[in-house]
Amino acid sequence: MHPNANEATPFRFSTSDLSPQERMAFTRDVAARIYMRLDFEPIDDSPLSIRVERHAWPSVSLIYCETNPLSFLRTPELIRDADGDFRFIVGVEGARYQFASSGVEETMDGSEGALLFNGVARRVSLLGACVCTAMRIKRDRLAAAVRGLDDRAIRRPERASEPMSLLRGYAALVRRLGPTADPALVHQIPNHLIDLVALALGPTEETRMRAKSGAARMARLAAIRADVLANLSETTLSAKTMGRRHGVTDRYVHLLFEETGQTFGRFLEEERLKRALALLRDPMHASKRIGEIATAVGFAEHSSFDRAFRRRFGDTPTGMRYRHASDGKE
Image (tube, rainbow, N blue to C red; front, top):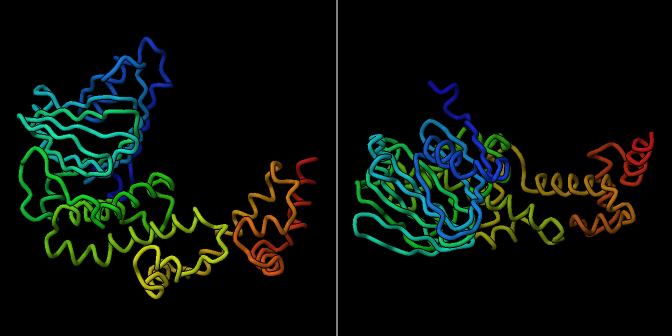
């Protein structure tokens, strides 16, 4: 039994950790066939280069794969494992991909998702160097969440739909922060992932209602948080500007943050101050004036930055920089 249904089991693999002589055999026999239950074939003559990061829960796995052009196969030999589960391609950054199974062949843009049934032989070819984000989902969990789930080889969600956008953003956030980094997300990540896939494919009414108050809300919160962190230098950041960018009201933004026990304003200030502290401690930014650092993290006024910093860290920015420099000399 898994020790904790909400605790991810990590697996990381990179061909750069292997000698050129052993890369092909080890990658095929261990990383691909054992951990991914797939075989692979290089598409061109470039040296094999794969980096895989997988986070596995009992009901779902989230997989990130950086690779050069490559085909992944569920061969007749591999499908004897009686694996009736599904794989869902969340997206492929940097290339198109091609699906082939039972006489069906489709080439898709990297932004298009696809649900693939593990019980049939197939080939999925990544047609260029790329980062592929995918999921492996237990059949019983997906069947309970999706209307009319069947064993067709491929099922495609609506292109450029809001659920797909939310799913891609949520998966990217889990990778960036780690599957246990955010206390507001950790206990619900596997459920949220499955519910977001269901929303993209056609959810049951129960799933739709649950996702509306759970997965969709948390995915939107994740997207807003990521937007804030990427744009801390913008002095005009507010719940209103975030709401406009993400198609919701400022009140909705406030509610999303309040549900995590932190207001939007407090989150914004905390992240700006953490960024400022990192800059003050970085020797590469030692020549920057305090006012420049305040501006770089989005404070419009030096005085408000100074007050907020002192309130948070118990010292002025100048004092903190001096103490850090002095400690480094001892």
